[in-house]
Image 1 (cartoon, rainbow over the protein chains, first blue to last red):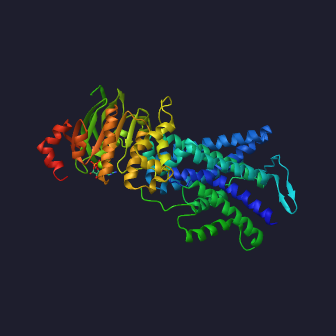
Image 2: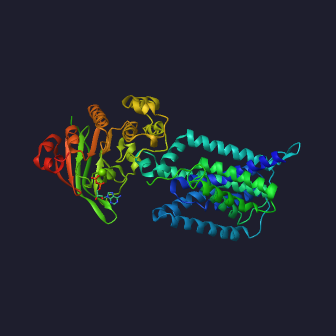
Image 3: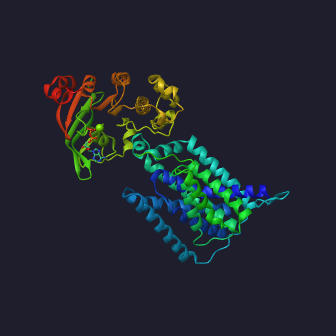
Amino acid sequence: MFLSSLIDGIATGSLYALIALGPSLIYGLLRVLDIANAAGLTLGAYVGLKVWRATGSLALGIVAGIAASAVFGLGLQRLLYRPILNRGPLIPLIASIGTFIAMEEAFRLVFGPYPFAFPAKLGLPTLRFGHTVITGVHLVILIVGLLVLGLTWFALRRTRLGLYWRATSQDMATAEAMGINTRGVVAAIFVIGYALAAVSGILLGINYNTVYPTMGDIPAYKMLAIIVLGGLGNPLGTIAAAMLIGLVETFVVMYAGYVLPRDAIAFIVLIVILLARPQGLLGRSRKAA
Amino acid sequence: MKGESLLSVSGLGAGYGKIQVLRDVSLEVAEGEFTAIVGANGAGKTTLLTCLMGLLRPTAGSATFRGRSLFDLSAHRRVELGIGYIPEGRRVFAELSVEENLRVTATRRPRGAAAGEREVLERIYGHFPRLAERRNQAAGSLSGGEQQMLAFGRALALEPSVLIADEISLGLAPIVVDRLFELLGELHRAGTTIILAEQNARLALEAAQTAYVLEAGRVILRGPARELGADPKVVDAYLQHL
Ligand SMILES: Nc1ncnc2c1ncn2[C@@H]1O[C@H](COP(=O)(O)OP(=O)(O)O)[C@@H](O)[C@H]1O
Ligand SMILES: [Mg+2]
């Protein structure tokens, strides 16, 4: 039982990390909470589902979902965020929330208000050892999640884009004056952030076997809690916070599920931790620029 | 020593919002020349340099750099042309290590650069052994003097042909200031073009060949640095209190 819950918790945490990583990287650069990222998640799920239905190939569905979401994200960055970024933090946030809601209405109009099933086979068997059961879907989430998170860590620490992301997120003007194409970095991060959203959306759709217009709601607010919890603009903190929330949720539901609705837990953890560490798990108090 | 015209600025105007700071500033810098820009605090030195770097959009005027129009280029494209920059207040990337700070610029050199990345970093550690000792430390944990060395080294890691430096002496111990000016002299002798803004006019006028005196956003004097350093008007206005 315990081991099953542990693995469940880590799988849930990896999924949350996938969901929150893009907005965390974007926040680091632009200081905007990219709520609309959750619309990329839903878009990726719908496109992935449709293309999988049409072609029978899940790989093709995933690629198409990633592409659609990345194009959407890049468009948002160019057409929505770029023109209003210098208007203070509130306006981009409201614009982002507005976009998210508008996209949900668009999904309703285009795909209809009813949920679709997403019974794709991920090709991994359910594992059983003793009392421990891991479903194939969870196994895939676990593997994809940990893989992407490992790659992210590697990319941030060991690649040029990672170095440039860190420099740009600390001081965009100086980064630009040191030769970094900061617009290019922002564009690359939107592509990556929305690609991750699409992968999360497809995994969520398959995991719960459903895709529907408002499926981004819960990811949107959990991602918020996780980003704040991890320390704003700190991707490694985001990953740690996602794991923590995934584990706490799984164990609380396991042992006290009747007292606490699962989706409230993220915020309870958030409140408790922020009382002790206002800067978040791995955040540092931000110096004035 | 003087070569072809490298940078030519004419009629430059700039400001912040409704506040006009620079008015009709013109500047000629020859290849390999060491130019000082002096003037009191608030005269507009930093504003001028940020316009040259592309961090502030001018409201008037034009500039050519090696015959190319400069003001159309974003800052990172100017860096690609070989312009290194030491910003006022150091502006090191506090959460990156010393070495990562250097790698930011070392990786922005043109692809065909003769020296490898490692070689460039080692050269900078040779100039600043303190940085070598602290290469894995976060830049934010360095002392002010060490941060200024890092800001200097970060510009050098680009192997720039032109170095734009803003107030490198501010708030530093004399021994560090001496070391930095010595290095400017070495770079200059090796052919680097240098544009240096300094409130410490005495130092700047001793080191440079040509100087501009800015006052309230206008160039009020220009000439050979040593002559300006001996000009009673300049001495009265800028050198007496130092
Ligand atoms: N970011 C800014 N916003 C508004 N005014 C500024 C800003 N930066 C500088 N100024 C003003 O522009 C004038 C010139 O400043 P600056 O170029 O920094 O002079 P210097 O470098 O010679 O000390 C000053 O009056 C200063 O107050
Ligand atoms: Mg200044």
